[in-house]
Image (cartoon, rainbow, N blue to C red; front, top):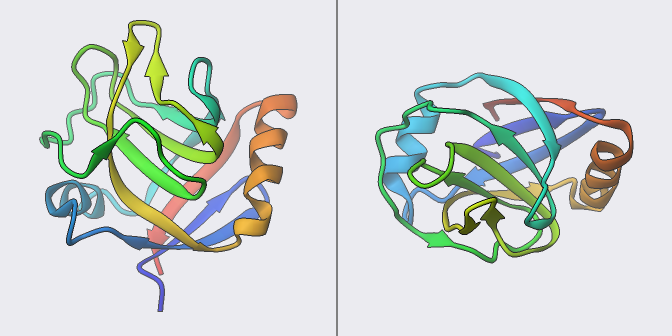
Length: 137
């Protein structure tokens, strides 16, 4: 059974928390489930979609952080030099903002529905923001 069900636009993905490598980030996010927002296409990072979260404070530091997530990996940038955000890679990503390269906590990995990941990315790029919902699997 999956830890999470993620509905983004018309697509549904199963996912797992990376609790061993990012325990604080996973616990903080789990306390906010179900989590609903919109994804928009990234501006500087390549092939990804993101959820801008402004000054939302997840009360976590860096853990299991990377600037180069693989497709299907979800990062939480806890804020600092740029706003708090969640990023989902659907292709090649070098995580960045207008102030330069960032690193985010890899805390979720998609486990099913990967065949629709590029479709979600392109839909978001060409059609605009898509609703997203994270809920327990």
